[in-house]
Image (cartoon, rainbow, N blue to C red; front, side, top):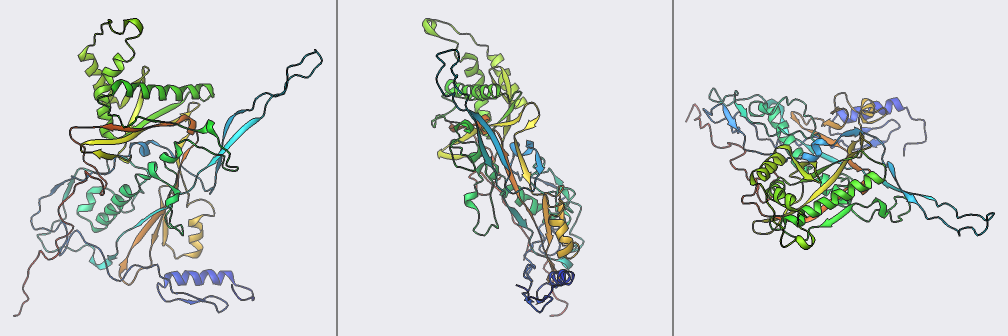
Length: 498
């Protein structure tokens, strides 16, 4: 606590600014209270491997201009289509009207007797929590930027391809990196490109697997609820904990069966799940409603292998004709149906083209060699025509009275800035002499306002002939190669004297 004497708050603010700008060292607040040394500064030992100059990754003499990309980043189909909106409420509460209780009382005997009484409305409330995601660059030595080894070190390389060709709104717009092509020739762009890759990979899976139970003890890292939690059964009222089965999603297991040998069963499961979701939307008065199916890329292609034949013959034989009825299928028509579903990214269910997004962020396991298992998500996007029900929210650091306004008072000019309309907050750490570093954070959450219109089909197995390459470094089908630098490999130049 400050001493009991009156505090000059303007002087206090100036002291805080001086503290932040001074780096390490500490000082004294107005009133004689000492403050500790400011520690959030870069290390005095740079940790950066550069692109050019001695030991630079791209400094090999005579390296030809075209450099072709073999790196892939997560294909996050669902995240790329969900809207994002700002909201600075810590605990928004949303309601689901679950029904009206039963009528009570007896039917009247006489004409003047009271009739039964109508029931009471019931409400189930649910809420959503913030995540907290942050990453920082490595430490840079300012006067190392812009160097080249000698005239053999060219800075006109061409990045052929762009790993960021799939939009991902959950990756910040990196200031200073106009395009991935700059990463081969410019040290700042290389560092920020590597930063963007880390952000793209490290947080992609949380849209499905996010669980606040994994938060760090002091809140430095937080997780929002992912779809594995939001699309579920066991919903409870946020205030009382009372069960709300009317809010439950449809969860159905495919029983570890393989798609290729159980086509009819698979089509039937998918059809009944979607049919029941549409039934709920219609009878709850939420039409027109729209959904998207989110699944692994490899699973989608395995499904479309068997879907045309299974869909075209599903329930064609019934009753006494089941053993004598002859079915005729047109192979060309079935192949055309398969190709059209793949080209249009949809499955045909009850005659309706249901959109499909492929998403590498969905968890996949390999229970047996060459056999893979994952699940399909039925995600409601909108109800009543245009009302979003699955979307992201983010803390808005540009909002009135929020972080950026506070930074103008409590931090040196330029220490903090935002990108993407206030969604990401950037910080330039106070330099340690010529060593510099930046970091960024965001606080997002995923909302699903109509869990009763969502579903998951779990425990689906499939066996592609060749599994696709993966982009997560800990995945079984991830590959890279080569080196990160050329340290110690040149140039070898003798001193002018022996």
